Length: 127
Picture 1 (cartoon, rainbow, N blue to C red):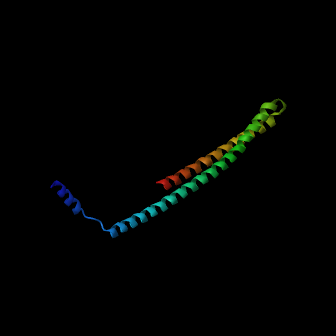
Picture 2: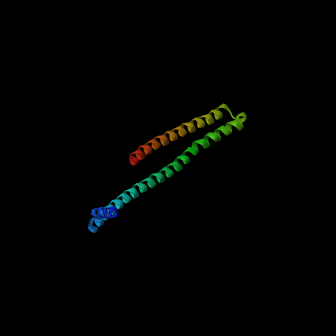
Picture 3: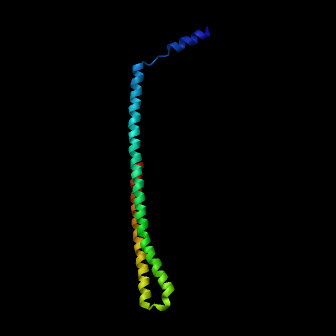
């Protein structure tokens, strides 16, 4: 008797027609395709940002080497040849060191400002 009641209950469960199932499946597939396209676009945007960062960092790295090389060269010349240099040459090399440090600071500040701008762009991208 109990078994029959269970059977009757399972028979009474409404069934979804095949057409409705197909329609729901098609809608879900369309939704997934749209989400996939959106994710692909976001991924491509992220790839572009990363490539831009790589190029930017390579350029900054190159730009920072020049003032550092000038500082190192002038400091080495003063260190090794100060006995043979007159005051004018020593101050000339010290001036080159100061100029190179100023250039370094300008490049570094430009880098930091650009990095902050990129961070704002990324926040807008991810937010």
